[in-house]
Length: 228
Image (cartoon, rainbow, N blue to C red):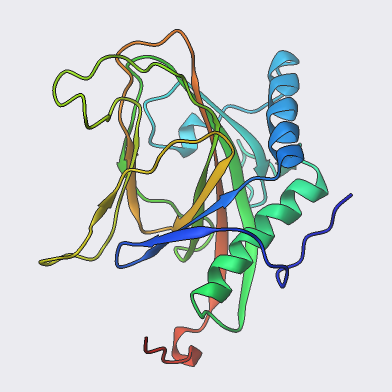
């Protein structure tokens, strides 16, 4: 098993929308393991449905990991390997360190998969875990090659696209971001960054993504003042 550490340099890029979004390439064996575990568990019908925890208009939403406050209908569970969970933690640690957050604690809260079919969508929303402060994410597991013709402006593809919207605004501010949906990419962003996914208007394939929520406990008063 490969052990990743928060001090290890990992490839990434970023975009600022007032808040920061980072993008990490998923190691091929991690990417393959997640898809394999998900598909095998789905075949065995051993994954809990997760729609009642989510806002998406997507019937096929299944949980892989839950370590939050236990409720009667949702017990803690995990089907992922320690190496996969460790890799998620490394990415979240890297995000926080790169954004100069100090003296914090993280805790993975929940991980689930969305399988989106034609006409399904995710309305604009934010995330949270046991805390209101934390990091969420999107991993592109399977993206259809054709999500249908655009009704207008075929030069701006929006069918089945993820759109992220920042809390910053004003003239010359970049508020919205529609990332390229590349299989094997992993985007990390704050809980309170609004985002949505538009419906596909034709596709025989499913759009498969994973989200991971991570609670972050820290004291913002103790954080250093950073001036660029």
